[in-house]
Image (cartoon, rainbow, N blue to C red):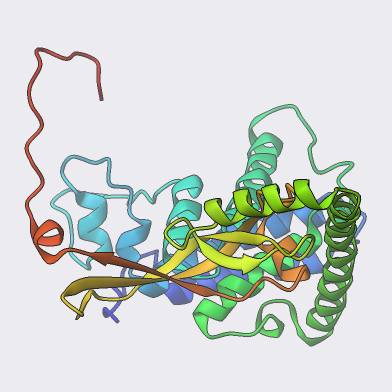
Length: 314
């Protein structure tokens, strides 16, 4: 890992300390107080920033400066300007970069973080009071889930962020949410199973063939549908891609995927989101394997033909 710039305001230690400080403020106010989610939103932002700083402070630099002064600062260099004040990247970019870097940081968690950040922005930059009537049950479980994913990337436990007692309460809360998710998704599966049972054998056979034709390995991970038993597909987000290898005269690339969707063309079952799939017993990571002809794999991309002038196409 790169040696951090000791003069930088974006070092991992500073970001981590600030995240813990804001979390401590959140936990010291009554849970019904709107300051609880407010301070928590700031704590989550700096936990995300600490995540990027752990990889490299450069990831926190605002790159819009044409002179690259912010990048120079992050690299440990001193820009040639007096009283230089470094500018970090905006929170939305921090969240996007966490989704790209942290393996278990799913799109669901990214969406939650963006929504939580938007509430914080509304609180600070408008006359609105988005935290005033916000019920803890609507955000706190997802908050702790997100924090645990980021902290795991740090090599830390939730207790190091919120304390031992709060971490125990968070675990119980997440278990309850998982139980509710399991009940919800099982109802959906059971409903599709009942509709499937009511179909005659001819229709079942036709739909089974349709499902089998759709559920091809190149489209996703083939499984048996939990509702009707037809072939179904798991779709997912790429966690990482292994280096290409040569096998049987083919270039093979294996991608480790986190399940985010289940589709069955037989009974019409459609489960979205990793949390729902996890509750249904389909949360395990899987490998997507793609084979390429070596000539095609290493061939240069053909240059696009120019068809005339194009304007305003940034």
